[in-house]
Length: 344
Image (cartoon, rainbow, N blue to C red; front, side, top):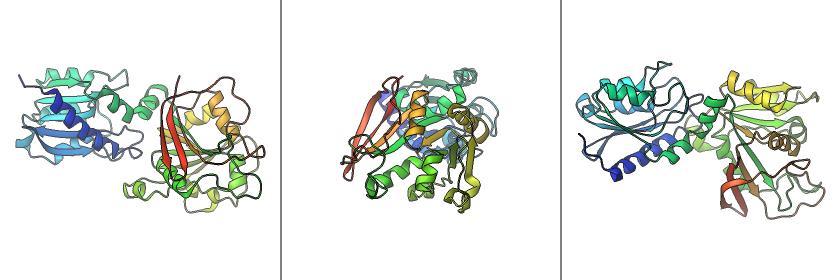
């Protein structure tokens, strides 16, 4: 038997979580996963899944260790190791073949066809298995992918800059921006987590946005330009809009006459979009909330009152309230960022 120290398991799983977060926004349609290999209370190697088609976290970590170091080692993985052949061989087989003595993972695979399968496979190969270490933190990292893999729909984040009286725009003649440069820079980080950015035709006509990824940290990580998606209900769109003429024009999609849910379904199924960021106006945001399609909200609250002339956050009144669970409130420059999950 191998002596198990819960404190040690937690410590190494936190390191694995740090690795997993390095892959957030990069791995679709796969989940972000981190792995730490340890032996004798010391880290042997670390790895994370960098992008779909590349080595999984476990294989990347094992490639950084010698065969001698691997034999008898413990692998800490944020998600249950894969147990079926995909673009890469099963990680559970690779761990067992390398002589790893113990595997500790945090989140169980949410796919019912795979859930618990790695545990059974590893134990049959003589590998000791422990699961559920820092489960909630590990599940939080893969939350968008878990929805994607179990429902066929992407994780939807509603993002907006709003005034204290719930308006998306200033009175005419006062300029475009409600929020500060600091808040707008922070919002770029959301784009670094998203596979697609969705707006309505009204936002395209009013703002002619570029919807490009400009966060330097995300670009350094290898994040590519998200899909730029316009939902147009029959409206004519200017061919001179930035989305149709700039260097990323091949990353622009236009959906006409389709319901929002159908658009999201196609973005997930055809374009491998695990996470979608809605940056549209009040009509699109209101539609998303009314249809209960929003999973997470990120609002930048500006310290001003815009008055009656401003566009309301969700257009027409919602039939019921949408409450956030344990929202995080943080000051960004002069603004407040409110981010949280929509409570179901």
